[in-house]
Length: 296
Image (cartoon, rainbow, N blue to C red; front, side, top):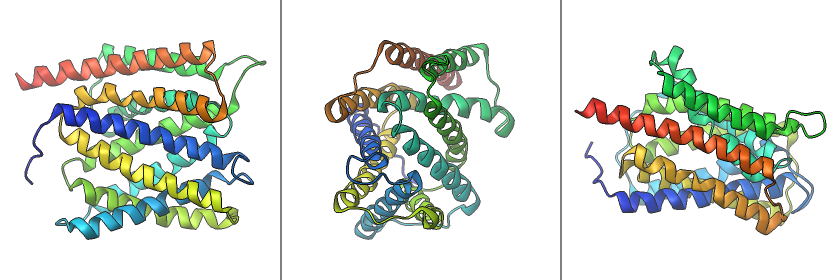
């Protein structure tokens, strides 16, 4: 497989675009999960729309580009997609009840959970700095949960569970890394995701309004474009360079929530999100030093 030419400026632009698009999917999910566009849809129906329309976009791109596909590793794909479907469904459920920025900040715990899961599943060693990063990020998540009788947010537990589940998905993604080309991974992932979502949605299906159909199509299209931008951005620069840029998703999420739903992040949201970002950045910093040490 021919390596993708390195282009850090283009990589930064692609990751920034992916962040804006990804935050847009949570905005539409919140509109669909509330009565903004009609009777609220169940999170499983929202995730079904996400996989349906993303699959249409990726199949179209595959037909136009005609890439050389190879036999996929079905076991890894099924594991990755199962956890991915469950994680995105839980995330869509959470944004109907808590600020998009809070749910997005909690989602930054994905790599922290992946780090912890990598110990038993990938036999990776974890040093004190990584544990510190995990502790800092989890402290921020605890603050966002607002663990007092007067302010506790049960729905934030949905976002926290989603982060843990998607952390497991990252383990499968790591195992898939380098085995197949990006467009094949996206094609198989969204095809399997659509199959799982189609079975799950049967018991909760309700006829969407025209506006809701448009929002469902928007989620699928934005997610497909975000995935394409992210995968291509990651291929054009070191992960340590692009990872911090992806945290711009939090900025976009807060902006969208304010512009559409007039939600202003409160002091607790700002403090908790900042602490999670600090933990995530510590993890990125240590990963950078680790890679540099290995390359010497």
